Amino acid sequence: MTDLSALSALELHYQASKLLADYVECIDDDRLEQWPDLFTPDCLYQVISRENADRGLSTSAMYCDSRGMLQDRVVALRHANIYAKHYYRHVLSNVNVKGVERGELLVQSNYVVLQTLVEGDTHVFNAGKYLDRMVATADGLRFKSKVVVFDTYRIPNLLVTPL
Amino acid sequence: MTDLSALSALELHYQASKLLADYVECIDDDRLEQWPDLFTPDCLYQVISRENADRGLSTSAMYCDSRGMLQDRVVALRHANIYAKHYYRHVLSNVNVKGVERGELLVQSNYVVLQTLVEGDTHVFNAGKYLDRMVATADGLRFKSKVVVFDTYRIPNLLVTPL
Amino acid sequence: MTDLSALSALELHYQASKLLADYVECIDDDRLEQWPDLFTPDCLYQVISRENADRGLSTSAMYCDSRGMLQDRVVALRHANIYAKHYYRHVLSNVNVKGVERGELLVQSNYVVLQTLVEGDTHVFNAGKYLDRMVATADGLRFKSKVVVFDTYRIPNLLVTPL
Image (cartoon, rainbow over all chains, first blue to last red):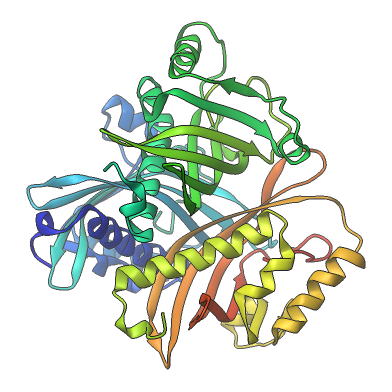
């Protein structure tokens, strides 16, 4: 898969959905070490509030501009950060392919992350949208950039696990 | 795209999902002015409780039977209604094509709308199902009718934004 | 449809999504009598906590190893169990086909079940993932086994309706 513009709309939608499914599974199944591999080496991963994004402000809750930085985050999360045990569960929908621009597939989708804490109850942790740019690589589609625009601006404690 | 019955099940599913994705994005990204364009001029848009729908009662929380009425709602929402600032986020799933009937594509799906209010927390605002009839137009699939059957019958305040 | 390995990845994804959509609709539309028909006669249906599943423990909240047992559950639910009236609404996403193994299609997906009780509010009832093995039959894909691994280990009252 090298020429995205040769693929049908249906096939592009499927490929984009597949990458998003792999992304979510890495996080929810706690295989975070595999998570950076879904990005290109010189990627962007940004987590920003909807309020800031709408106003064109760049202050972000997370900002990583290489796969190495993503790997560092995972190491920090495994070894340095202290946080309560929790489960994450993403529900993702509305995968909407916007087109191909300079070899990059533009995809928007909605997500909600449900969190289960030690008491065993599950609640809405965070909701928002993904604005993704995906590129074709020898291993299939990968994220060239992923911007997470979140609605939920009251975030309890540290944002440890990626959204 | 004029003859729906010539399309494969897979293609119909994709086209239906795409229209639903465009619908949700209009609302969640607050581009409501574009929302009526996803309906045919002589459409039906009905929002009804599951209890009433199950009993065959017709009392609805919203009932619009033309694109013009949908446009009026948007104007009212922008200029007349007073309500607290909020974000909406739809998560939609289970898009299930039931068949083609007299040139109309019958599609059922489940939705949940998450709302974020000024405090920054996100909660479940409304859940239910969409019963849609879509028709082929020169611009692609459009809603001939959309019936929103909601489970959540305690609706705080006014139902301002479309579901 | 008899040879799954002859189908494209896209087609497999669609077929799996369709079975899951039919499954969810049976439950949410309260057509539970049709629910066992989505399984093969010698199926497995297991509902297990993520904690137990992760530790390799087999204690389950539900365990049925034939279609007949599933039918028994529905009869019990209709006639014997006493429980408050409620609505269920599944939102399912992230349908991820893992491959074909000995004629079985391995599929993982995420789910959240929203519940509406008599007060009319909707809340997150249960979230988790489905680990499914689907096989081709004369009627289309059916569940050979369905393992529901749930995050939400505080379950209020009886788990009556299937997840």
